[in-house]
Image (spheres, rainbow, N blue to C red):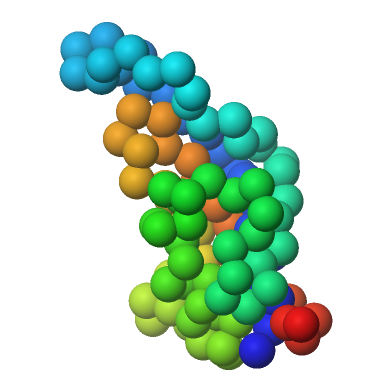
Length: 104
C-alpha cells in the first residue's frame, strides 16, 4: 500500500446559489489552494474535511493499492485522479497522486 498526496487545486464559490438556497452557516470550508495533505493508505489525513474525504476516499484507497488508469485514460498521469468534494455551493477540486512511498 502506498501513500497518496492530495493537493487542493481549485476552490469555487457560487454566491447566487448560496443566496438562493443555503441557510447561513457559521463554519465553511477553510482549505487553501496549493495546500497538500498526505493520506497514509486509506487513512484520512489530519485536518482534512470530513465531507471532502467522503468524496475522495474511494479514489485514495484505489490509488494506494496500486490502481492505475482510472476511467480508461482520463488522466495523463495514470496514478492520479482529479476529484471534487460534494459541496454544491463551494466545491473544491483535489489532485490525488499515488506516491512511491509505502504507507506506514
